[in-house]
Amino acid sequence: MEWYDDYNIDVELIDSQHQELVKMITRLQDALSSGALNAEIATVLKFLVEYTRKHFKDEEKVMAAIGFAELENHKNLHGRLIEEVKNILLDLKKGKPIHAYELIDFLTNWLMNHIRHEDKKIGRAIEKFKNENSEWDGSFP
Image (cartoon, rainbow, N blue to C red; front, side, top):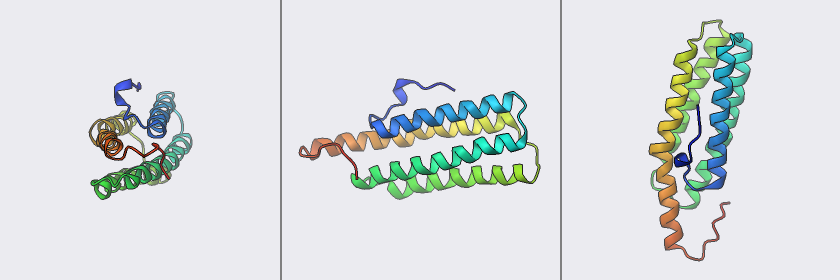
C-alpha cells in the first residue's frame, strides 16, 4: 500500500496520521505474507486498532471545532470500522484462520475510500471555515 499526495486533506495532523495508518497496514501485509502466527497478526491488529482510535478521536475533534455538519455520520463510520476489526481479533483469538488477502483488501479499500470520499469533505469544510473566519489561526483544541 502506498501513500500519494492527492490523499492529503491539508490538515497536517490528520495527513500524518493517515500516512502512519498506511504504514501499519503495510506492516500487517508484510506479517501476513511472511506466514506470521495468529498471535503476531493479532499484535499488529491491536496496535492498528489503538492507533486508529486515537486518530479517529483527533479527527473528530477537528470536525467538532469547525462545526462539521456530517460529524455524527462520520463518527458512525469510524465506529463500524473499529467493530469490524475487533471482530477479526476475536476470530483470531478463537483460532479461526485468517484470510490474509481479504483482510488487507478490506483495510486498504476502507482506508483509501474513507480518505478520498469522507475525509476530503473535512478538508473542504476546513477551507470554507478558514475563508469565513479570517481571524482563525488554524489551530484545533
